[in-house]
Length: 119
Image (cartoon, rainbow, N blue to C red; front, side):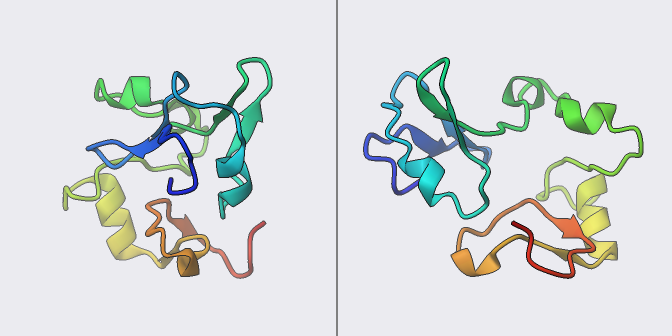
């Protein structure tokens, strides 16, 4: 978020990092700086972009589309603040890891079974 020269990348009150396309100038600094390789440049719109966890859905209490349609149930999404939520319970009961913890970004995407670096 810090590399954006115009403040287009921001963290909402709910903790989701978003890009305001009305402010994005398409400099691609955030694409280069993202330690997870999760950002990309949307050529059609001329702005940087990233997964928003289907923000339009989660703000209505729905699950992100990838979670809802996953045929094996391999994805879990929810509020970590709610101790009884499926995601909180899963994290308590399983060995989970985050990508690039050394970045200091305090990521909230957890993985099971990572035994080497993921690029």
